[in-house]
Image (cartoon, rainbow, N blue to C red; front, side):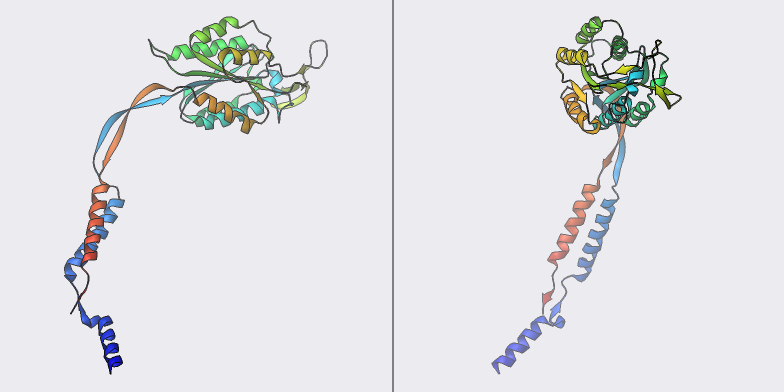
Length: 305
C-alpha cells in the first residue's frame, strides 16, 4: 500500500497536468523580444557617422637594388638579381605598413618607385627591375646612395624628423668614385644604411642577356670573359659605420627576417594625417537588452498546482 501511494505521488509530480504556466504570455514576449534584439545586434546598428583625424605612423625605407650586368651571375639561385628580388619582396611583405620606395642603379640611379604605403605596388616594381634598364654594365654605389639621400631629404619639411632607412642590395663591385662624402651626409641626416651582399666569394662568369635571353657570357674588348665575385669589404665597412648588421644573402626567404626585425627596432614617425569616417556602433545596447530579456524569461518557471 505504501509502495503504491509512493508511485502515485511520483507519477503526479512528473505529470504535465500537475503544473500551470507562470505568466505564459509574458514569458513568450520576453523570449521573442530577446531573440529579436540579439538578431538586431548582429546587424551592427549605429547612430551616426562622424569624421575624425587619424595619424599615420610608419618608417621611411628605400630599397637600393643593384641591376648592373654582374647581378645576372648565377652563383646565387637562380641568379644574384632574382635572389635579391625575392629577398626584397619577402622584406616588403614583412614590413607591411611601412612606407617603402625602390631605387635601381648601375652606373646611374633611377627612381623605380617613390615612397608608398602600398606594399603590392612596391613588390610589382621589384619584379620589373632588370639589368637591361641601363646601357652601361658597371656599378657606382656613390650614385645610388646620393640619389636615395636626395629623395629622403626631399620628403622632409622644416624641423620634421622622420625614421629613414636604406636597404642596399648589391654584389659589392664598385667602379665609381669614392663615396665617403655621401656617407657623411647620410649620417648627418640620421639615415640608417643596411647593406646586403649577394653572390659568392668564389664567383662565376657573367652571362650576357639580350632581350631577356641568355647569349653566352659577357666579353671584354680584348675577348676575355667577364668574371665576377662578391666583394663585400665596402658593405661591411658601411654596416660598421652605421651600427647595423651586414647581411650576406644566401637564403632569400629566410635571411631577411632578421633584417626586418632590425628595421622594426627603429622608432617610427608620423608621416601624415587622414580624415576617416567612423561609425558610432550601438550594437552593445541591443545585445545587453536581448540577454536581459532571455534571462528574465528563465525566472518565469512552471508552478505546481
